[in-house]
Amino acid sequence: MKKFNLLSPLCVLFLFISCDTSNKSVGLSNWSDDGKVYKWHLGTENAVNVAVNVDKAMQERDYNQLRNFLSDSVSFTTSNGVNYDLDSFITRRLEVDSIVDSRNATLEWEFSNVYSVDLDPSRGGEHVSVTYLGRYEDENGKNTWNSINRYYVIEGKVVWWNTFNQDIIDSENK
Image (cartoon, rainbow, N blue to C red; front, side):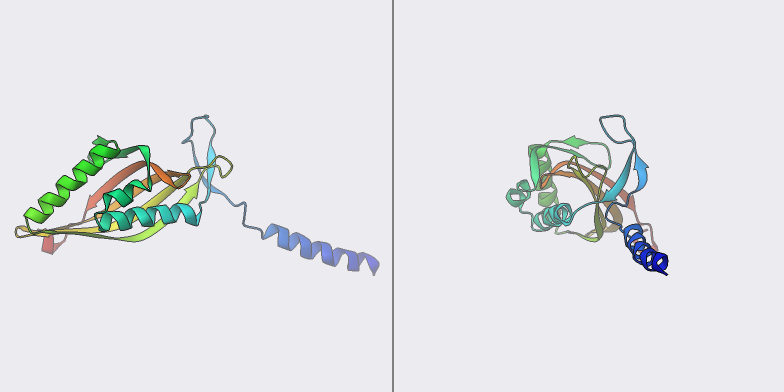
């Protein structure tokens, strides 16, 4: 009978240990400078908040505020492969804003999901993915698209930003 009493707490302890998900990892990636293959871990809410703040600054066209969430050496790659540094990206955004305004057009987007994953929580740096639905409309018609922005965030700053787009073709856009 004493063996059973000792085994019961051990079984319960084992059950709790086996249900611990704090160190769970999934998938794999060889994205790293050390040649290792890593598994993905959940990222942090802090990195997600950086993406939310980037979006807010972009929506408000507040590029001074945007600079607070971007490293000075940030690298941007657009969906057509054009690369920008911080100043040239902001210059281009101001040009786009001017074109949109001069055409009396609307350019809107909203994100449908944001998440952060991390390859090695001990090293710092998180990969944040933001999925958007974008809409542009002027007197000539409208266009809608899906967009994915991928940010690499280190210590609260985006160090690189890649954009991928996919047009949405429907009867209204033809």
